[in-house]
Amino acid sequence: MKELLLNNIQIVWFISVILSTFLLVTISKYTLSFIKRKWSRGAEFSSLFTRLAKINKVFLIVLCLGLLSYLFLDKETHSFMNRNIVRIIWIGTVSIITVISASISSHYFDKRMSLVSRRDKGDVTTYKYLNYLANFFIYLTGLILIALSIPGLKSIAAAAAGSAGVLALIAGVAAQEGIANLAGGLFIAFFKPFRIGDIIKIGDGIMGKVEDLNLRHTTINNFQNKRIIIPNAIINKENITNYYLGEYKMCEWIEVGISYDSDIDSAMEIIRQECESHKYCIDNRTEQEKSKNIPKVDVQVIGLGDSSVNLKAWVWCASYLTGFKMRNDLYRSIKQRFDKEGVEIPFPHTTVVFKGKKALETIES
Image 1 (cartoon, helix red, strand yellow):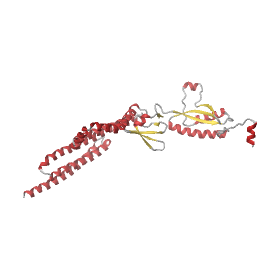
Image 2: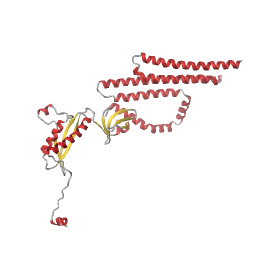
Image 3: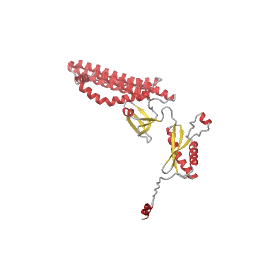
Image 4: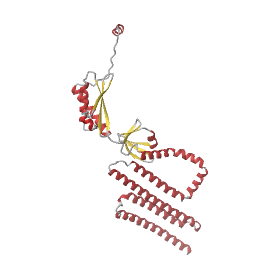
């Protein structure tokens, strides 16, 4: 009869735990949904509520399994189970606090970046990097607090302390690159050799628009729409050409060679007219230069080559992108005007002069 009574208690305990867990999961789910709907800023923290719902569900299920395990343990292990349940509650609490802290931090930096964009300053680089950094330390702190509650990890830490010298050396070598990237990101975020949205050139090769800066690397979108991932430590060692640093406008160089038989003044005037009439060409002259009737586009002879007289025009534009388009258009329109006006762009050629009767006889033979 006692054994039957014990079995009945076990059945009641099993059913009670299952029903209680199901009830708590349902109540927490609808409570979070209610708060999200009724709270005026609930939509802003939509991702937070979603993560909290998942963590809470997992936490309750694990707690349920822990309570059900009492059915299969004797009284001697109840104290051990009690400590485990406290540990599970601690892990769940730390996880929830960590997620809430990370979401609040992300929301704060997202809001700051939104305000910067509205004011048309465009510099969200520092806030974006600080967002990654803050979330990294928040989750790292959460993991440390969880690890301290797990005996197995404590024993690992104790064993690591016994061979601290070797482990420190290994960790130092392994983490050297990561620390260099982290420090490189900090230098970029605060000294700002470039910002998110800038068009830059790394060394003599990679060129494109900066899309992202995180703790490890910088993402650049080149003009073929390919994302190039470059570690921050490498970028800090390279020469950086920033086409948007200080101001966006830039000067394009239009270089054209004409034959020695062509009229230089006519060719220079054609180049000037084509450049000044282009829609992307801007007037960068000072008021004093305008009063002196200095041309909007300066065209000069820059050299006498083997096959051509080399001309160069300095044309100002609003940005690198408009300059790229303008340069391509101008080479086309200048070539068309040269063909129309009879200005020759020569092919490379070499004139060989033979002197003396002996050389002439050699050629004839």
